[in-house]
Image 1 (cartoon, rainbow, N blue to C red):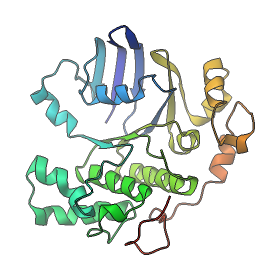
Image 2: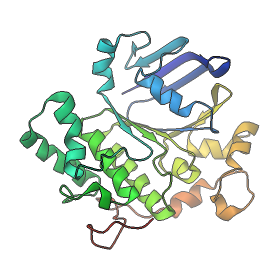
Image 3: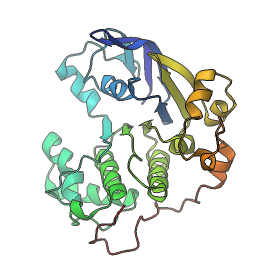
Image 4: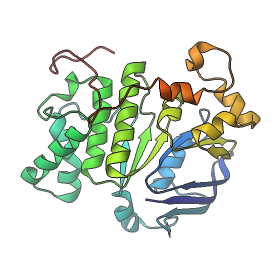
Length: 283
């Protein structure tokens, strides 16, 4: 899925969120959206699926402008997206398989037997094979986010929206979630849009990075281009990264070091725990 945003404007009362935002996301890439709190990152995601309409501008999904479409017209576009919420969005009363298969049953009327095979396939893709009957309440935070990714994949989503996928996770588990995002992108070629404050994650998974500032995109580029940027907005933003460069007060991230130290990926994402899957891991 290719997405192009042209001259987007949006205000809530006197608060101007977007003031002529332009952004292109190519099909199959991992796009990372960064910016300070309040810069409209989550609002942008809602625009992409038509939950919020802009005051003006265009949002083109594979060439079709979705601005102004009716709810009926938006439905076939929305089901091409999969949303991975910050907290995972799991229904605690259901087991893993029921959570993953719920959209297929409720939205598409699929038979439970037909859904079972797809659920197992997608759980295996995110490294959770054999967890179908496990209670969601026994999963770690990282595992719940992987279940959320499997749920989006079960819908055959062409674009995955990740809202702060590593928020609240410790560094090793955050690295595992990053690996899952990369593997899913590689195996499915789905376009991935990641909203994050985690700079290590952003520079690890991002094909292209975009920094929002004062209603527009202040900078777009590859991780290496961001590292070399002389844009004072970029340098100031990156200098505030907590935990970057071992807490040194450097204004640039050593992308090569981050990538060199990244664990080697296996055919399936690393597990987060060595304890029994029936025991919830403390994070």
